[in-house]
Amino acid sequence: LFAGLSGRITVITGASSGIGEGIAKVFAENKSHLILGARRVDRLEALKKDLSTAHGIKVFIHELDVTDRSSVDRFVAAIPEDLKNVDVLVNNAGLALGVKHAFENDLDQVSQMIDVNVKGVFTILKAFLPGFMERKKGDIINISSVAGLEGYPGGSGYCATKHAVQGLTEALRKEVVATPLRICSICPGLVETEFSQVRFGGDQEKAKNVYKGIEALTAADVADTVAYVVSRPAHVQISDLVIMPTNQA
Ligand code: NDP
Image 1 (cartoon, rainbow, N blue to C red):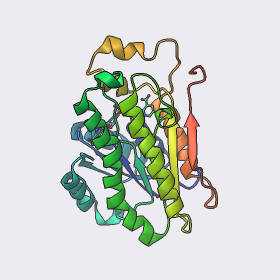
Image 2: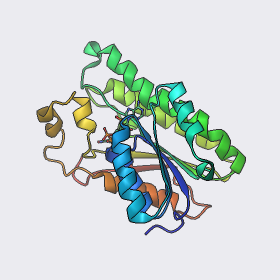
Image 3: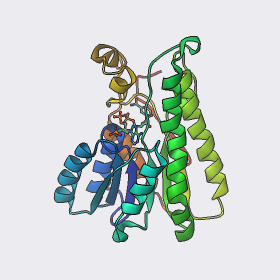
């Protein structure tokens, strides 16, 4: 168990699958209360049922589309009074679409990645940061990617969005440096989730190929890392963290 997570209130965007769902599970095991958002509310409902009965924590779920400002407003407004003092915000919702060379990029796909991975993070931050600033405490974790640190062929759109996440996280960390707030960017390598299915529009064959020859990370591996970062003593800020499969170059 990770010391200090018990009783804290954690918001996770994109909690309906993969890494977000994994973080919800690890935080629930550590007795953190949860506020979970995603578009697929049926998935959130099932997760809430599992976690609240197994761990005796409060779990609030609500539909959330991070690309839609009014959806974000509804999500924030619906948070019950006893969960409003959020301690941890995990900006996790994100996606990649397609693997295309820049000269053949589908601009709608590029726009969608920017909307979710970049603008979505700005919108969620705008909604929650005032509360963090007022309470003068808390952790903000942005799930970036190794694609935020390097470029790879066919990934210009996705890599651009995650480089943007790196930039905004770094700027935010410096803006709040005089406060006890901690800001962290986590950059995972390959994680086996629904990410590749989304990327290839449900083409199972292409999705599977992504993991060939690599023992990918699990969502639980990344979730453990997030719990580790958040449970450090108050004077320790892990500002950037890369987590890779051992055999991924
Ligand atoms: P998944 O596809 O399994 O999960 C993505 C989550 O994001 C889902 O819960 C989805 O929920 C949510 N989401 C997507 N669009 C929106 C939206 N508009 N509003 C709200 N929620 C949204 O992929 P992962 O778990 O792998 O991805 C999570 C994060 O990790 C992403 O930011 C991704 O870029 C990053 N990452 C993933 C890696 C990997 O190899 N898998 C590696 C490095 C980083 P719903 O569809 O219900 O809205």
